[in-house]
Image (cartoon, rainbow, N blue to C red; front, side):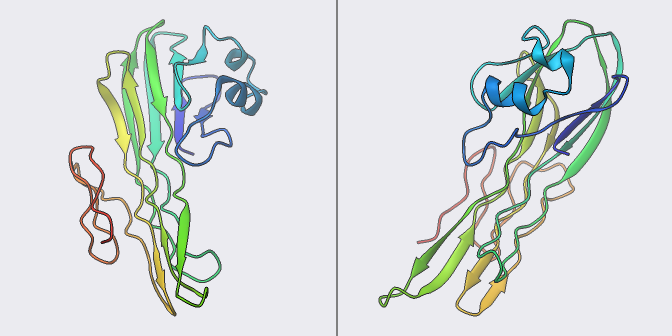
Length: 193
């Protein structure tokens, strides 16, 4: 449940709407995915600025509980090991005013890729880190942010599990399971050389 907002008659969960990779959902994907919620079909209530940024207009003034979850890191080689680390889940209650706009970025599970040796035999795989999930106000001020998990690694017959996103309030990403340094202050981490 990447972003759940309670304050409706029943909680509503914002998700990637079936999108994969580095691009988030389009408005058509969102409307199809949220088709059982009549309010979500009205672009005054739910819209998009560019793929990936879900824009939600607060319907009523009150205290709202928001839960965000970062995405799991990619498994290095599905079926063989190197599971991605878990994304962080955090909750908070905020006072929101009717008509205010929240921008919701839902992290997506990390993918994976592999290399082969000179004979074309697969020998190493790496999972990408999971995407962070962000809820910000219309000025870009963060309300809640949850980091994604680290990607797993599989090399020959050995695998390493990706690290879970940290619980603490930090400004840097976790290191990869092979010790490669994570990103800081919103920048990407170091790649393998």
